Length: 121
Length: 109
Image (tube, rainbow over all chains, first blue to last red):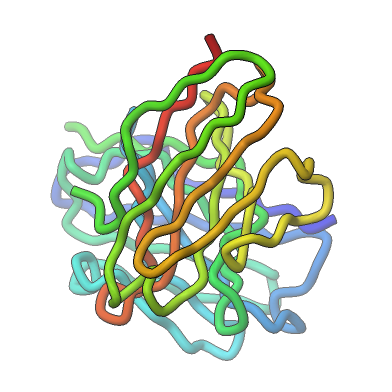
């Protein structure tokens, strides 16, 4: 059964870089036909897609965040990562990683449990 | 402000059928399949419906989806107390890529 798990610091200072890793188990990123993505959810609010990546390195980004985001993949570790630069309090959110159904389908499944990142000094 | 518009809340009594709408445009719902997610408080979203009306394995057939023009709907029949959750729609947008609705909180009265 495919499982994803986010890891990274729960507290980041304003203007610094948020770095998260998603570890995939129960399946191989490199042999998957799908993308892998990051989605965030501010407390009590809706979902915002951040970026997605294919094992071969193809990426696509949310245009509103693109200038501050880098998504990467490490197939040897079966992991993909997120870096969000110059964070502010508005970046405080639950960050989820998930398998992205593209390019075949439009869905995210399964999702990791999520990790709360707070931006505060 | 979400690209896809959902009512912030919906409610129904046990056994009833409720419908949650998701309104978009020709840039998204009008041209791409819609997915629906169910999220209980404190947990991650779970895929409920994909390709407008397909259910992943394990999702009860009480849940159904449809799309017409630039809108989509999620219907829940035989409402149960366990269905009380937040529901989100999502799809692809030609400009913004992946977009979601703001979510609908379903209350079972």
